[in-house]
Length: 116
Image 1 (cartoon, rainbow, N blue to C red):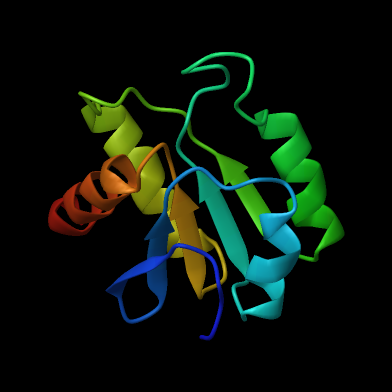
Image 2 (image 1 turned 90 degrees about the vertical axis):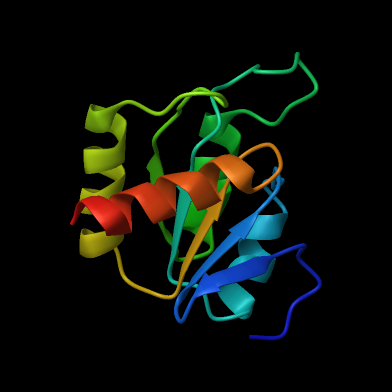
């Protein structure tokens, strides 16, 4: 998968990234991703952060499946981890997950894999 997006591969068909813009959705689709999961709550760090609605609209327009599972940076509940496991099992891969830095999505993925 060749792309200029700031992605990190964490599994054979799963990558994570820091905050992505709506414009990045077309690039993600062009890079071969089939689904995107946004783990960042809207306005977590102020009004300059792109909204989930804007990113979702761009993802759908690019032909990607999209899910929003906003979770706190410091703690992900067992219910959130279970929901993330459901999403990664159900959504087409390759899968791109993002949050503020990529760390929260990485932790969610590790916890979901361990729980399943």
